[in-house]
Image (tube, rainbow, N blue to C red; front, side, top):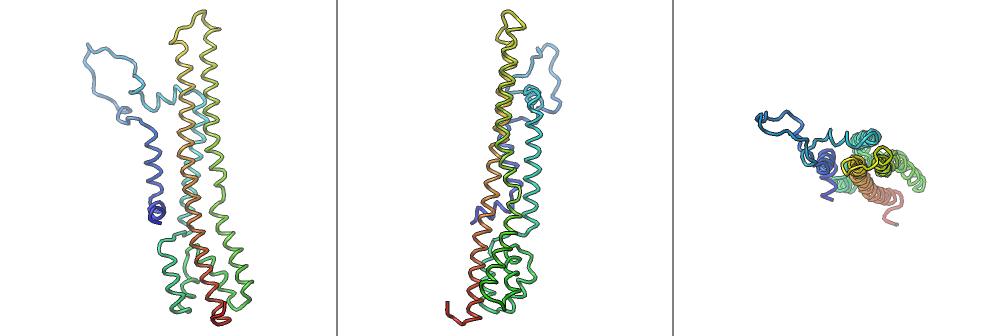
Length: 256
């Protein structure tokens, strides 16, 4: 569980560093450089020296659509992250605390559940409020509200997955556009040179690269959110089972 705990606390930093690792851009090259001597010949930047702006321009108009998709993915990922934090989905040491309270003093446990904002406590609370009713009814109340709470966490994650799948498809569309720009040189010039064809080929490769650079971290982000939800689900089930067991014991003694 240590990985999940680190992930829950440092998701934004982790995602930022992961995405940044895909973009091997020397940011210092975007700032003014030291003036070269007059006798030094000024040449166009090589691929290793080009900045992110040059890279985007060479990708053509398809980069606009990829930029929109990338922005949506970043915005939605941030919205989901802050929603998870707002929903109080912490699981670290929760079950241990839950178990200690319910096994020691039930009145203290009740007070804790009624006032705690954690997602698991909110689900258990709906069963606790009906503790004097039939066990099946209590279990049904908990099941219903757990589905509601987990559904809120899962809301829209399919959109994130679909955007991640769409990015490489648009990148491949840009590949076709770039190759067309290369072949159209044969209709413009009788004998186009390799330099004439290179711009279109480069555009094709850049858009493919951009699509994959968007899709790969999106796939990771999507699966990390699913991992987070799975962790919450497991802890919720453990707490619910223990709670129902204690309710049965209070109602019927120690019989199962």
